[in-house]
Amino acid sequence: MMRYLRVFVLLFVLSLSSILADENNKTENLEKNISINLSPAYIALSEQLKEIEIEESKGNVWTKIYSNYLTYQDLKAKEENFFQNSYKFRLLPKPTKKEIEEDKSNQIELQTILGKLALLKEFQDDPFKRLMEPPTIDDVPEVGNPIGILGAISYKKKLTEQQNKYEATYTSLQNEVNSLHDKHSILIEILEIEPSSVETAIKIEDVKKEIDTFKPVLEIFLTTKEVYSKKIEESKLKIDVDISQEYEKMFKIIGIIVAFFLIFLLAKYLVRRYMSNKDSYYTINKAANFIFLTILGLVLLFAYIENVSYMVTVIGFASAGIAIAMKDWFM
Image 1: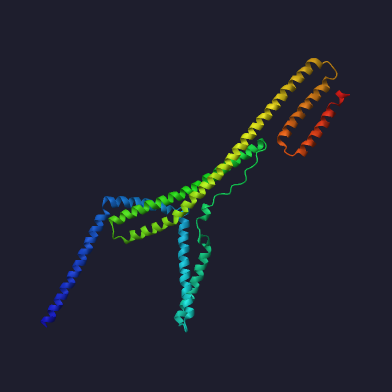
Image 2 (image 1 turned 90 degrees about the vertical axis):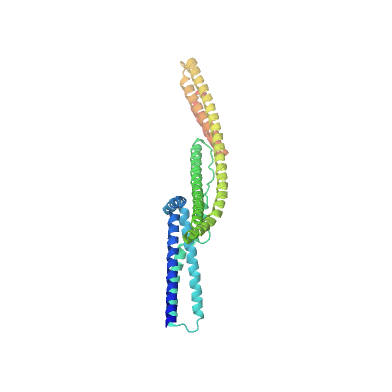
């Protein structure tokens, strides 16, 4: 009897010692966690991490696409699992009622998953492709007249807007990747202070996975952006050259018109001075006006009409007009 009593007392003492040891360990861990949580370095890192997570909570197009991409991958894994379970069920010789009900439930769940996968199909292979594709560059408009200059300037402005918008999309991705790197560095420092934190270790793995996903996307996007920028600059350069040539052409035409106009004013002055008292003054003055307008029209037509057949027709009508206008003078 005394022997059993001693064994009981010994077991009681050992159990009590174990309980007290556990309590001491819990107390030590609690004190250690309190010490860690109150350390200035841990508080500063936690504040930095909180700021980054607040910005992430606002959301952006890249994080939303990445979230949908992860959702698609999870649904795909569930689909594969349900297919495997369904295949195993088909191999059963005599399924029980419970197994039959379970298979029906799996089939319903599988149909739900397939419906969700159909909605997220665009995130299957290359979810970021849509954002990385540069806007289409339209054909550079021809600058063949002064009005064409306005169209070319408008087109150039449109190209600049497209380029700025595309570069802003790239900048948003670059900022997202930089933010992820900062978050990863902060989490690593927190884990060094608190090595036993499983939650922090899981977050580090998740952030690392996200960085690995975005890194090749950023590199491809950078190359695409550089190529697109070069194409934009080539189009702008061509427009600038065309506009410059058109301005030069326009100034030459204005110079020719001004020269003809001065000659016309001189001719009018001479006619008024030496022939104003003669009967033919009115006819000569009328003919001079018509000749000047005809020459002005021909200069403009020669400058801006590219089809030669049109030019011949216009010259024919102009000659007939001159002959009719000067009929009285010829008579």
